[in-house]
Amino acid sequence: MSENKQSEIVLASASPRRSELMALAGIACRVVPADICEDVLPDELPADHVLRLSHEKAVAVAKKTAGRFFIGADTIVLLDGAILGKPVDTDDAVRMLSRLSGMDHEVITGFTVFDKISGNRISRSVHTEVTFKKLTEREIAAYIATGCPMDKAGGYAIQGGAVHFVRSISGSYSNVIGLPMTELYEALQTMQAVE
Image (tube, rainbow, N blue to C red):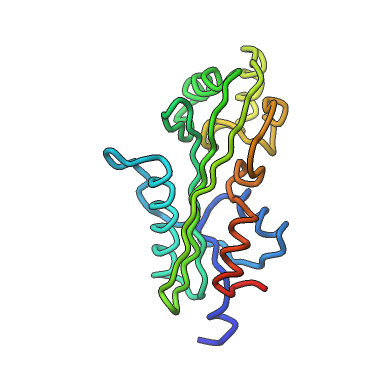
């Protein structure tokens, strides 16, 4: 394996939003989606859930892919202690967005940077508070008609058609998109994957 291959960064994610964030930060990476079970374990706390999945994604891709540094990530939306995953259908999307309407909720992303050569890893969870304005049924229906909510935790994308739903954010904006870039970049610096 060449030195270039060993130092390569691999993003273990199918999310185009995560690869866009990596590009915006100037971090060159290859994208290799992970295929793991993402079910919540019994009695698993939300932050523990995203940390576990981020680690499992990074390691699963590292086992089958050339490279050195592997980044796994998982994002959830938490409302009143309940995890809102990706909507299963349009009715589920309506239910989620109706619940989020006018409410404060939390977005939690867990990420792991795994060094395949040394076996070292850094895992962190980052929490961002988000407040939605009160949504009308018409706004919810129009947004769902775009198809955007269907592959997003909590049924919305702050960087997309739901930008006008968000009244305020406390914490990392990029975390709400799916990768807390400041914290991830610091972890990559600690691992000497970037300067």
